[in-house]
Image 1 (cartoon, rainbow, N blue to C red):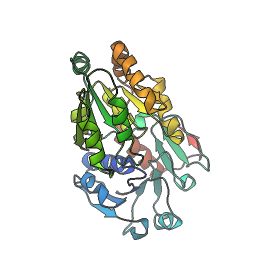
Image 2: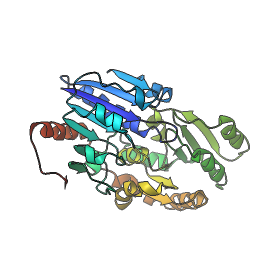
Image 3: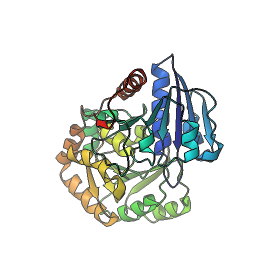
Image 4: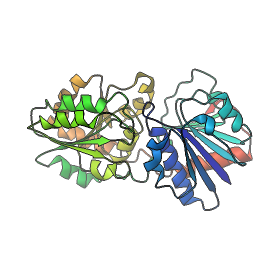
Length: 337
């Protein structure tokens, strides 16, 4: 079997599509020796470090127009917000077309959508088949569960640690807004500022904000693959509403989403219902939310415990089973599982 991945990423749209595609491609490559994998990533050199770890063929392109599908594939996984007529024409003969993105302008032309939450809306014609729910969340192998013993130790530290991760691109520079607000917190905290591969804003601004903070310890970290080695030592994360929110829930790390994108509110609804996260609509509300959680540490522990047994680490087996079933048989269109 031959499988092609095509994804788009960048500073404006973030690095999540590339990270998710790479994670699934890598997992399939490791688990299925009889499957040939190729990944085409459209977004330029900003994705080079992620793909430097790939042990299967991968190609970096600057623009969609350079895409060339060179041979027959059985399955193509698409992970992007928009695809042109030209792109869809180049893959029209692939028997099984799959979307990994919950937002896509060509849903009516794909066979399967794997969606990481049970909540979903379609402004247009839906795919033929939809598999949805937390079992289909694609979690990178670098994200591991935090033991309750370790998390309780973190909660008992004299100086608590908080991680801030606003995505691989952080086009709105929420990282800077976060630092400016968190500096006002009245008691000492260690803040780990995780900067993604696509962070292109001024480091000087970040450093200048840190220099004038005499209370907190603020550490800038540029890391992708080792991010969870750092974040597992924290008691709380401040996140945007991207795929890191699902990684944190899987790891058992309570988190607060600040200023969630309105079009992505559905992606957070299920996580809020199982009580693994909190949401604030403005940065001005952030310190009050942190103070509340730190005053009631049992609530943080409960959020950690609520994540247990929610996700299925065997998402690769589920996804491949459904794709191979589609290749072998036909089913009624427009059904949801």
